Length: 405
Image (tube, rainbow, N blue to C red; front, side, top):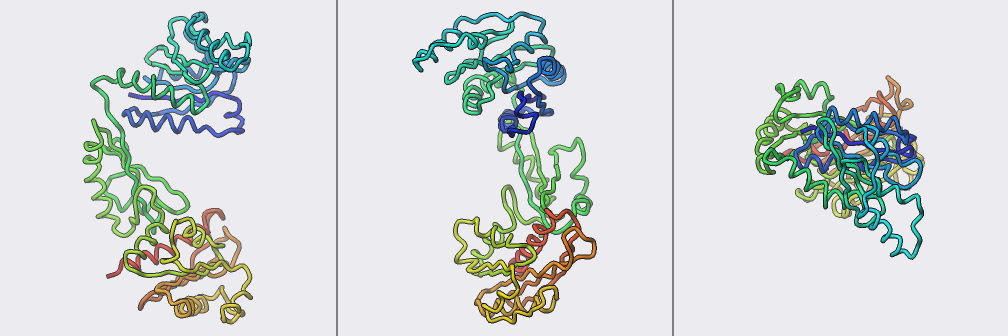
């Protein structure tokens, strides 16, 4: 079964407000095994709304809309639905009584404009809103069943759980399925290279499907399966996940919400090791990531961010140390390991060129028990991505050292 989610309002199309309703609704639809194929955002314009609903009802079996059910002139959902259906708006007396009672409880007279909220396109049904003056609307057109809910998130979610979800479960009947996802996190190769390492897993039409996304150099493989319950879905995913892990080996570093600093912290705890870092080129990204964890004092006792090279003198280190030189950066990493008494130390040197330049580098060094590694991170790419990629390259090398027997 296919779904479309429609979000209505000038505040959304103008970019003044972020649409979080669509994300939440799509997740709830997936829990029911309904795949969302379209997200539509439409302004407060009558004809545009009518076209949006008509299009959605022709290409999806389930349409969930939020917004446009208020009492003001720019709330046009009910009028646009009436136009699509070719019917008049009719008064629903129970809805009007409920709205009037809401104002009585507030000791306020009901403005006449709120009467429109009790008007519904002929042939549609009200969706009860226990804590607001905007009832929802349930109706059908073409191949689609549409549910129109208020844009206020707390009201929308309550109405979803009380009315929309039970209605959809009934609509699905014996065909009900659920959709489940599993995310595998990878680092160390490019997106295209990673796809080549997998034997025909990322292709259209495959079941379970495998999608690939990249965010700040971290690659996420998303396995998606459809089944009657969680057990069936995850059982269907298992062979695919095993294949991914066998093919990619240590390129896979985690799953679900894992980031590299989470994994490194867990490995440090597991092995009883400690880690320290000194950063200039990454401006404290590594330090900041570890600082977000609840307790890192026992695994990461010190993370330094250096803006001014002269501050090295405070550590008893020659302030003339050239942090654009790989050998000097390595010597500094060794000195940090010794002076701080940690198992692993990493130093991120200084950028030799501005971010985004093809010939710029950032020297990095990592030392561990009996291990010394250095590399020159290239500065190619968008400036917003380069620094996180360098920091993750450092953490990934620490991770691989920690995995050695």
